[in-house]
Image (cartoon, rainbow over all chains, first blue to last red; front, side, top):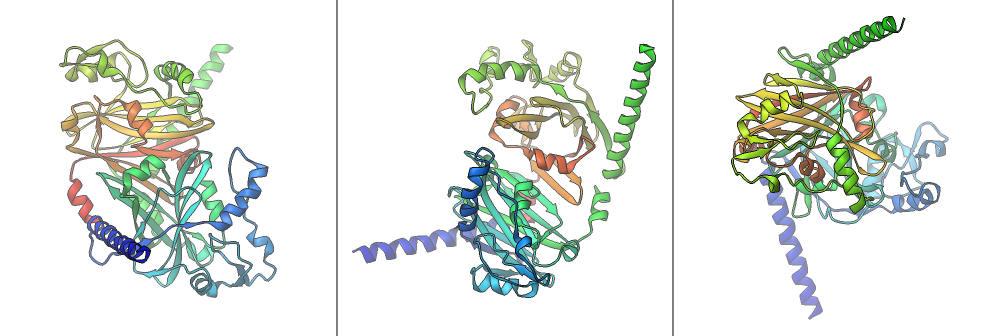
Length: 242
Length: 242
């Protein structure tokens, strides 16, 4: 009996995912856009650092600065950049992608424009939604994080990091776009390098920031669809264009 | 001696304003865009309601709901919609603009696309920056508010209201755009009618919301330039366009 109940539950989940996928496709209807359903992960690394930070600054709830770089002795090696887990791995920049895929099971998607469909936005903070995005000959890491910067007031932070050096990152512009309920919000910026810490980018607030109320306005049935596009950088011309 | 010091101060202020105007023009360099320097106003109405609200909910700091409509007995009359002052005035919708101009000295600007340059962003909350914008045969009220929704953490909220009915408002789309330091943030939405309360739009968070850190990234020398454009509504086509 329990077996049948579980089977029925699984079928319902599949139908629900398919329905979400269809809805996201309907909103982001441009041809060739890949919709990727991204499930949340409760960040273990974050929870651990948070406990340590709590003693230092309980009120602010700000993450301690990232000390990745201090642990690296060989300048050719970079630490594991997975935002989810504390991981002792270090290796060359070229093999970070395969480490993230194999060890941390982060999916990778191809395409200049994709739709990132984050499910279960209601889950309590801290929660992360993560994928890698392969585009224009490079790999990018997209991180959506639900975090309580101010206690009791979770916010959503979304940013894109290049799995490459800061000099390489300067050649690109990424765009995150939310579009629902006759509202549209677009964030465009130069991606940061994965060598900089994703935690500090988010604590600096230098990313797309959504209050819970705004996230709800853009969500559909608990899922948030974010359109992602990456282009080669044309910052000066785009500033003049306004 | 005091007279000369004051004259010198005034000249310095003029040079500073001119310099800000030039800088905003440089960023928003498209031909025909009018740059309007908007000085902050410490919201007296807000401060008063806030004191009353403080007793009810000190921690949340949320504004009490707007009770404009309850005071209106003649359905043809609307109350004063000035977000700055509690004002006993009521009149027909057609004369709200002249009331706001004459009694509350809110400036009005012409043009499809203008640049709103809010000065002195560092001033403590609650502070409002307000202008009226005349465009496409209608008048709009742009409100930028610095407010502490969470105590000790001021945020900036920007929204545009049509000085007209909700049905008329549905015919338009407004866009607010920030562009600086290789970052761009765009908010597009249908304006609300001035018959709805600007306070509730802001407390709902259904507007452009900026954390202090993001506002600083987009500010230049303490001033925030917001590009404003109003178009007739093409919501369904723009959703499909993504």
